[in-house]
Length: 404
Image 1: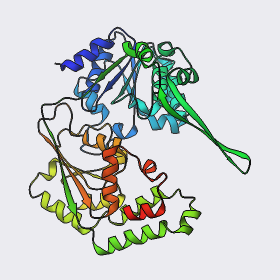
Image 2: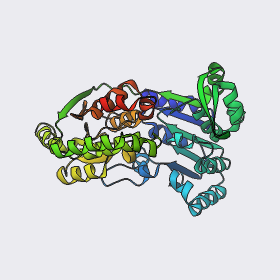
Image 3: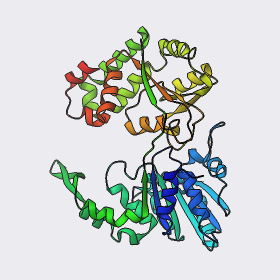
Image 4: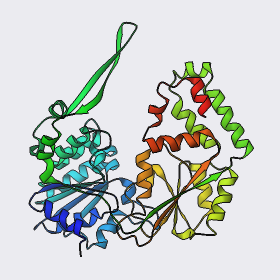
């Protein structure tokens, strides 16, 4: 049987040919999508567009197809295709388009719909064109926004121009306050950037989209427990860490890099100690207390991932960037954050791989934290929801040296 929030979602969208399921990771939106498609008579083709990594998954990880089939599958021939493939391959795009045109009553589902927020991107333009050949459309995502209200326009436009009935420029002028900054160099215009400073008419926007959108947060009768494991970085790695700090923060390098060095600097400094011996010693000890085969280890670097894969063969070792979104891994309930990341959204999504509908155990998380300033800085900025570029903006060289 459907859970109450799943039943509510199906009922909410049942009167419309298009809709958006903005349901938190783990709430079972794939199940709802299967139910909605199955409720539409005479559908003769289903196009399911999703991130490539969720369609072609590693061994032991359920794919989108597996999840759909678990709930009975769609009642029509189905084509699963990666969003990235539609963008990168003309052949795949044209093949998808031809199959849509051959169908009498196609249904399009776009999973991780925030992938189509950028109206200038080729994949957005191609999905818009494909969407014009289907009456029935559904978009799925954990949240409708990543940065601003502008994320909504392309998603609603894909579903139907009639929902908002306005161009992107009209949308921006109706709902956003923004400031335009133009930089001049040597008397010539170098670039112009716009910054959103606020929103207006939000109630009006909600009145336009509310019939077509169902939102749902995740509430489970299990807990999430977080612990920190503090490790000591070995002398050689720490020496390299401080060497890189001095190298990047000297006056000559700052001038050569035009001060745009902070991402590169922190990446290399963190990489210097990503495989320090004490991390593995402490994780070995942890696996004497918890089940390795019920544990996910998230790594940032290729080196740390390979080392963990070789050492902990029963654990599931994953990459934040490639595998923190879309995967259903509820048969695990322990998560180790082996390397830290600045990206709060990826960090949250990484935890959602285990904490989801169907999980029967309390979810436990361990954060490995090293004894250098960069580790503490990442923790502080994650807690304050401040990005790397925001933090370093306006900081002096001496202030950065002191923190790191």
